[in-house]
Length: 274
Ligand SMILES: [Zn+2]
Image (cartoon, rainbow, N blue to C red; front, side, top):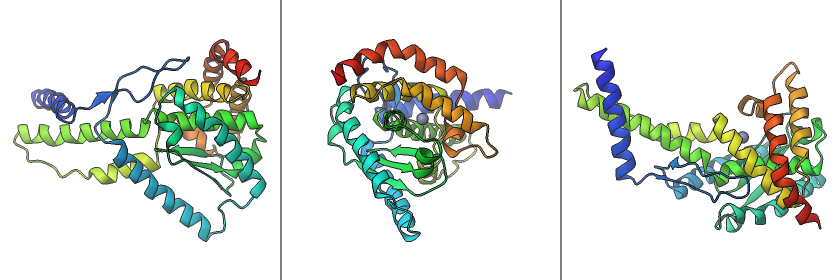
């Protein structure tokens, strides 16, 4: 029990030391109309994250190309890219640097209901998500806005920072207790966090808020957020739960939260289409 307590103490001391030495707390975005001001633990640099994302994204594209599954449907690709082109300038509301990111948008020919935006603006849409759920442009914009929001808020970087802090804490704690320092494979942890990211509920909520504002400002009806998640809930009833839903739970609660944001974002939409 005593050892447990000392380990925990050493761990929290180590996290503080790591945060202080590496200068790690801050916030990645401005709050926008919907508000997102939470302080974030940021121990890994954006540049490191973006490089890792670039490599993972290139790997995915190369593999898809080999199987002739990259951008097979030109009409669908153009549609998705046109929506991205309208959303991207709106990111300046949340961070000034984002419109000039090296954005990339591709469509993977796949049955899966999935989409993501890697750090630095590397977007991949899975054709199954759009085709199986018969998504409207506004619904695609809401999904894309949500995924872009994860990149703007640098949720993956935050998650990796937390993993790094935990591992540093374990190593330091063990050393303080004279147990010897375990070798931590940080790179492996990082890669895993990037590829199989499961965001926390609060990350999800932030991404919903920011994504809805991005869509509204780009002139897409934010009420599509409600129909989108209703479609997702229906898809969830199927035999195999869709990929996106394992990290993005579709629930009545989520729909209610989105509905509660509509009074804030509808005026932005109305102004955009005027
Ligand atoms: Zn998400």
